[in-house]
Length: 235
Image (cartoon, rainbow, N blue to C red; front, side):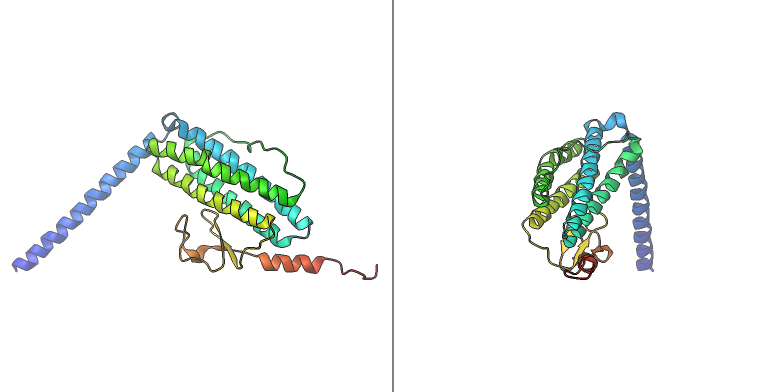
């Protein structure tokens, strides 16, 4: 009898602790949400605006490079570049989750000098730009967010760093004529492109691997090859 009473008391105590913990967590979240205003976030707001401007510009650049690749008969490269553009869209969606509550103003793409006419040179330039942004402004923005107590925003910037650096390596490979191992898949959450077998979880954002989206490289190349006119055919 005493054992049953003791077990009941332990269960009641655990339930009470859980309820108190949930109540404290809700209060913490409410205070945090109340403090997340444009006036309170300080430099973090400007960093979010700058990050959005960067991602908008890179999304446009990847789209232009994808069109140029397909026009030059490099359908496989075009498919990979389209996937990189989709990755920038994922970045924009993640940034918007923080900009939305702030009622942020609209942002234009960051200004960029014209890309070289050579596709390979343009790929190298985009790679250098992505690496410079990830190791410079993006890293600094993560540090500021962490100092201001916005760990979730700092985590987002760290994810952007990793994905942008991976994208830079991929662009350099395409410029040098190296093809990533197939199949290719893309994380719908952070935009990371993975070559070969899908991981159990995304190494950047821990998204389950079964939710990754296929990058149809071979199918795109086959369709492009079939659309090419056969040399020597009758007019």
